[in-house]
Amino acid sequence: MALSVVVQLSSLVAEPDGLLPARQQMALSLGWHIVLACLGVAFPAMIIVMHLRGILREDPVALGLAQRWAKVSAVLFAIGAVSGTVLSFEMGLLWPGLMGRFGDVLGLPFAFEGLSFFVEAIFLGIYLYGWGRMPPKRHVLMAVPMAFAGIVGTFCVISVNAWMNAPTGFRIVDGQVVDVDPWRAMFNDLVLPQFAHMWIAAYMVVGFAVSGVYAVGMLRGRRDAHHRLGFTVPFAFATVAALVQPFVGHLLGEDLADRQPAKLAAFELAGTTESPSPLRIGGFWVDGEVRGAIDIPYLGSLIARGSLTEPVPGLDTIPAQNHPPVNITHWAFQTMVGIGLLLMLAVVVFWVGRWRGRDLLEHVWFLRFCAAAGPLAVVALEAGWVATEVGRQPWIVYDVMRTAEAAADRGGLWWLLGTSLVVYAGMTIGAVVVLRSMTRRWRAGEVDLPSPYGPQARLADRGAGKEEQR
Image (cartoon, rainbow, N blue to C red; front, side, top):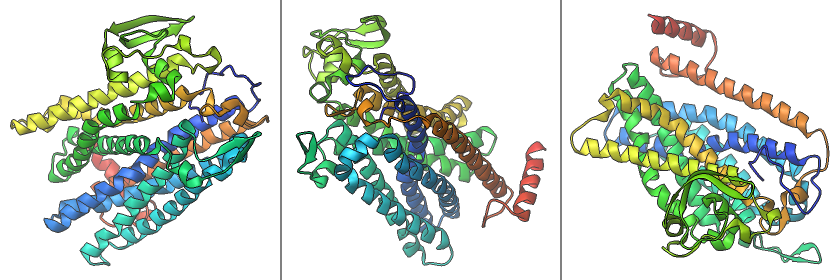
């Protein structure tokens, strides 16, 4: 499903009335849910590492952080469950052509994703309840299935998207889908590199976001062991992810010239086939011409094709009706790559400085950057999905089914979009209110938070608010 929310594509078939609202609805739902999915993938691993540190080193600060993070994770999991359920209904409601024709092909990963969700919910509950009630080593083991289930669930969802980019596991005979092999569809040729790319991106998003929270605390003068450890562990996860991600992304795009040449041409803003191809930074595709770009000779061929002379296929080699929205795809791709390289540089500077005896956490400018790194990582994540999904257009299943063929031919979907905007806005506000309430009570000295509300909670919030004002 395209994340493009503003462009109607030309197609060989008439565009149904539901196409544009369906695009916007999926853009909203996927763009909002993907951040919570990252938390489900990466946050449990960070909780396990912090909990193990607390046990092995008898570190009460680490144990306290692990307990707090688990409670935050529970709040975000509950919200993610709502948005994930909405997405499951939207697949059939917005894209009946896709699910009606390929439901048998895609059913297996969706079934496994549902099972993974229940396993994650069960063990999250056991882990939360187990504090002070289970032996420490057995207790921390309860978080392992939770983390594993989050990874499996994400793999299942990514397998569907990878299949849409590289469809397999079926044949079409006389317009009918036959010889369905759901295992082959689930474990398609693209699923492993695409999942690896998303998995690492999750650690970047969560690592930079969580460390950024403690960076803000340090900017406000809270430079105790709690904040330093709360910063360092997630930042270490983000460091590994930021260093590895460019190489995984390069591997994912290695055969893009053969697999989806139109997408590669849009990424590189290649209007014509050039040998060697330059790397184009910025620029726009206007009236069939590239304008305003900065060309760096040879680098386009080297990065995209692994050669100094191999050309990047140009848009002129592809029928106009099969062109994706070029400018959206190009700028989304460059935004993702640019932010990724910036974050990679930042972690290198931090650890090199630490190796040389300089603590950058004492510098306000670095803490401010770390506070911004979380939102930047989210922007890079969203831009990457825009590049992937918009770049596949006009196909919902590449080279098999166009997006216009899959959309519902019905009115009224604009009402669904409006309702969803209200619901997602409400969930966002609710999450912020609950998490701020929990944070204030923790700063006020409370340890056990049975709920974020109630008379005692509200009194604690008022007391914390007065303390902040003083």
